[in-house]
Image (cartoon, rainbow, N blue to C red; front, side):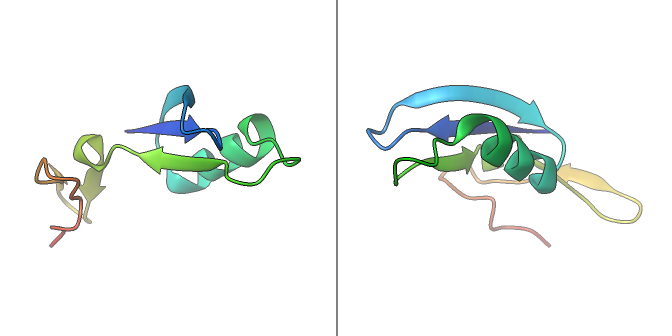
Length: 72
């Protein structure tokens, strides 16, 4: 699970949710959170909380420095 947050055009976090997949997070953002009448809405993920799973293993990713890019 990863923690996703919705940020409005003013930079305020307006909602957060733990979601299992990026596809589900995108659907949550588009269907329920983003205001299509105003540009600048965005969604961010806490990469340090995300798990990367291979065929037979899972491990935590992220280096605590805005990472998540140290995947094998």
